[in-house]
Image (tube, rainbow, N blue to C red; front, side, top):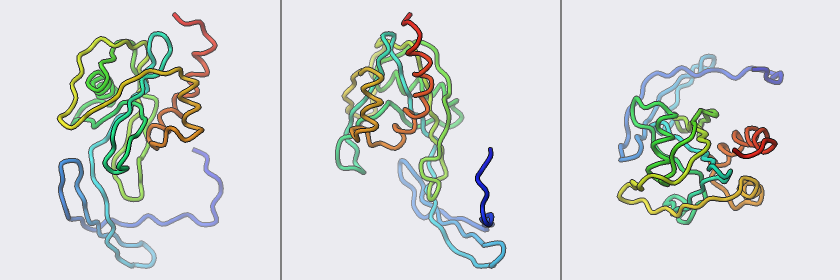
Length: 195
């Protein structure tokens, strides 16, 4: 990767020790002791440890995107998103994406591939979110929501969904990342006739 020239390269801190501060159902809060290599100063930093996640850009057979709307407790409001969820220990991200898509929306089928991976917030989190594209899906499966999930499922034309990313209707950062990674693929597909 070619990076722009920097006046100085930042230092890589040395990780000395870590301890678990709190454990919840969805994350572990850790205190990580680090030392600066030149200054020798030591500090404790907070790191949120959580499993990797997957977000799914699902394109239907008639070239619509599957979109979900659900209540988000951190936001204390509703969020328009692509489907997604937690990757189980040892699970392949593409398999997790196909599973999450079917469980949350009932959509399945087609071909699936990894579009890319992002770090949700590398300042404090140690996990990644993998973006999976599943093309040619149709609603064929029974829903399998978690106990607290309530999801409004819809489809919308790709260009409409991409417009929502620009006008603020979609504000979920990981959904924005997913759609940004999908947009070049859509530019290829839209020039071809639908099959």
